[in-house]
Amino acid sequence: MRWTCLFILNFILNVIHLTEGSYLWSWMKGNNSMILGDDPTPSGLLDAAIFPKQNGTIFLFGGYGTETRGSPVSNLQNTIWSYETSSNLWKIVDGDPTLPNQVSKHRSSDGFERPSSRFDAASWIGSKESLWIFGGYGCQGEGNQTCDGADFLGDLWRFDGQWTQILFSNGSLVPTARRGAACWSDGGDRLWMYGGTGVNKTGSQGLFADLWYYQISLASWKHVHGNQDSLDILPHYNPDLSSNPGSRRSSATWIDSDGVIWLFGGVTPDGDRGDLWKYLPASKIWIFMAGPDTPDQPGIYSEIGVAIQGQFPGCRREPYAAIGDDDILYLFGGEGFASHEEGYLNDLWKYDPFGDGAWFWMGGSSDPGSRSNRNLDGEMGSQFHPGARNGGKMWIQDGVAYIFGGYGYSDSNAGVLNEIWKLTYVDDVPSNQSSSNYDSQLFFGIDPGNCHRDIGIGPDHFVDHLHHESKKKIISKQSHKTQRRGCAGSNCRIASFECRKSVTINVNTIVQ
Image 1: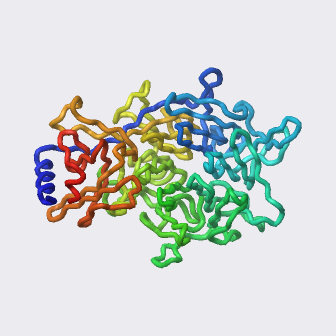
Image 2 (image 1 turned 120 degrees about the vertical axis):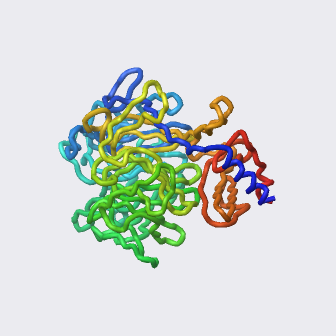
Image 3 (image 1 turned 135 degrees about the horizontal axis):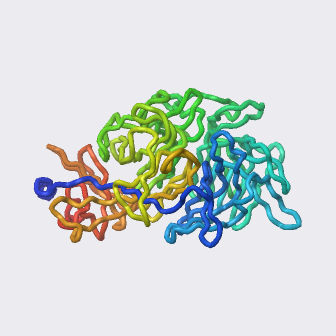
């Protein structure tokens, strides 16, 4: 039966000319100015904290909106905004965006608390979808006054309808003040944090290489790995268990469905990096996965949509990052190295942990400094794209990816941004089918049929991986080279790497 299926698939390859699916951008909202009133919109914000919730609501806290990099005090924020992806509307949840540079407020006669204005704080969604922040760079002090300077912060706050500062007794083991730390959460009891830049206990400033988590149920920090007082440690790319990413800040981070932590790039003591790491919490080890082992390297770009060993994004800081429900890692933009030059970037990449360990270049420019090309009214097309930028946030909601904010290019000069762009994957129509009878599937890591298939076809081998929702059970596996493709519908339709309405092969037939 397997060879019959192979014959059918090879026949399909000969009669249907297939094109790759496309990642299409559409501009949703934002002209880089704050709007108040019935339809409010935040100002352009850099290094704000973003919290995507499961109900489609995105919460945003802090950030700064200065037009001149290096002068963050001109517009530090401590307002919480919410954004509904379904309605494309913003709403002010807490604070006043017209009052920048606020110091912390604590419970008094008016009965409320609020953290000071800041940017580049570590942020998480904890149990019961509470919002958490730690540190950042911003206003110190407390009361009702504004600040005229900023510094590293080391305070921990929770928001669950109102703000509460988490206080610790003298002598408690806690991380020191910092900004730009890598952070991730499983949505449960532990809030993880790695590195950042700040000041250690001796008062020295530099980059950290320490790993921590805050355990909500115990109301305490746990120091897991790395010397909390050592600064500016270079990465170690050793084949043994001593490998580690070293000191760094402004990296991209993800956590997958198995609890594995992924980290990419960022600023290290000797430059920007483009290395990909994963951390296994159970065994407490770092593993170097891909990319260059030297700093400030340009990216290697080949053909869009094709995974090629040796291809990788250039070294960079503050990229946008998100992970799909299928555990595919997505990376957009940042500030760093394109194919030849350095600058702000708008390239789009994905990395499949279950494939051959190669990066896919999915779109955007291989040169820095690209300007936006906006659509109107949510229109979607290959000609539209956001400009090069860094320091914003990316998330995936209901199978669609979004980016917000940062610093970079919209239509003309560089500045702080408040644009929201949406990114949707669309299966292209085969050349012998019209769009009217083609089952176009819009998804971004989402598989409505609760299954997806890895298929590789070569001269002498056939591969069929069928994963169910958990991706932990492989029903059928043969040979080696694989490529992942999404599959939708009540069964897994496979026709030469794509989901095709014209040819349906039953799952049970394939695995016999």
